[in-house]
Image (cartoon, rainbow, N blue to C red):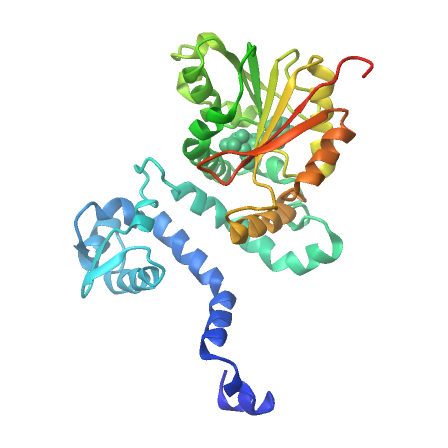
Length: 355
Ligand SMILES: C[S@@+](CC[C@H](N)C(=O)[O-])C[C@H]1O[C@@H](n2cnc3c(N)ncnc32)[C@H](O)[C@@H]1O
């Protein structure tokens, strides 16, 4: 704001605490923060840095960047606690910047690249329009739904699948902790991505068999351990298909993790497929973030709108999800947190015939 703006606002600018105006500016320019994270991930700064502080000039040589400009990017990133300047022009890792390392066990590098993928910069400016119409911007811009688009853009698909695997790597153990597999012989992980959760489940429970079920292009990149010849392959089937049409029949437990956040018609179709292909008494567990009591309100609400824009989807409330389960002919049983994550496990079962 300049002096003229102050006068235009009736000379009241001085009654606004400086911190309030500063926060407002910060919110307004927050896309620049996302761009900085994207640049850092794409340049591989975190991977090149290693465990000791390094001068920006040396880092620039390692990643083939302009030294002065890299110094500017690093200074911007340190303002968020991503890297720290230990001496003028020398940078080191922080807990945050470590998560940009590809070799970190809890790496979020590909999640950062997915959050900031080129298509996201096309859809966010259409948020006002999407709020008016309730329709996803993605389909209008790209002429295809999100998952169909991924089939035509292998680089985006690779980033998406790796981001999902990263997210699963962090939460799979915790999700398996809350799964009750008493009397369960077969689990189908519907929309299970590349199979990280399935592999974790099979390792933990040697008596369980599993099916990884996802779109053909996704299961083509399934983890080696569950594919033919892999150490878990004898208890795992990898099946390609569209869960809105059908799901593998007769399992005791159908798992959907972070899948039913697209449009309600698709969610209903997938749940109806489970009702139809599953057996009475079969259980259904939906693992996802819910809008209520989320420990990450800013992320969950932002993801809610992100889902709106890319797949016409949403983050659900407990009630909304229970309504969809009931509309598909399933019986909701309850909701419990997945400790150590922001996820919730929503459980339901397939009713007895005639019930
Ligand atoms: C957000 S990802 C979640 C992946 C995995 N469950 C996880 O939590 O890491 C959604 C998954 O649903 C899959 N998917 C999308 N449409 C599908 C469909 N029609 N049938 C089966 N899977 C589908 C995607 O390919 C993707 O792997």
